[in-house]
Image (cartoon, rainbow, N blue to C red; front, side, top):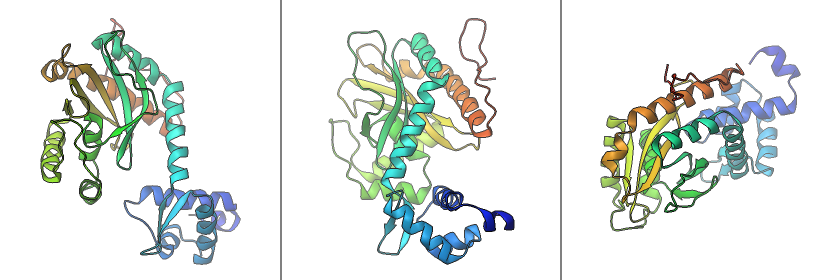
Length: 276
């Protein structure tokens, strides 16, 4: 942080810097760590942290007097992401994917031990699972959930798997942490995740990762269908199309991060999404 900014920066600017530091860290931070990371006086950081805590934008780990992102900040972030995705051309991309595959597709992100659907486009079939954007589903029993778990840092993943309950939702739900870890290892190797009647009996799903400009997995793109209409094997036949759409979504995310403002995707002559 430049000296001039440290001296003249507003309280709001400094609060944003503190939030940025907490967002970028893989673990809760103490006052001394935040102060050193931002090169700000500890007294200043303490004052800002107290204000952010009062607003529930950050939360205190009382066992260690460390701080992490609070529930209000999480909700604000989820709402902002959902609005951005729905208003941007990404909504059109999702509709195009449903048109090509003929089944419901959605985009989900991780919120602690749940997956939140930030956008979802239903297929035209009368037999389908009705879930809207904003719906939450269990992380251990869904394709997107397992995909996002698989790409978490090892320590964070282990903590989630062993601390959170893994309830049995169907006879196919994975409820053993070691078996789930083995499944996640395969997901990292294959670059996709599947769900075969693990969340809802008779429903299959396939998910691929969506990356940001820095190469981090920030969301999952999935297709859902009753197993009477589509098997997992048949869903895997759509992997090239889904990965091309995920690449197009990454391009748009990168442009948003860079402030480019360019929201066009490359399309082939037949109107399908191109990964180029």
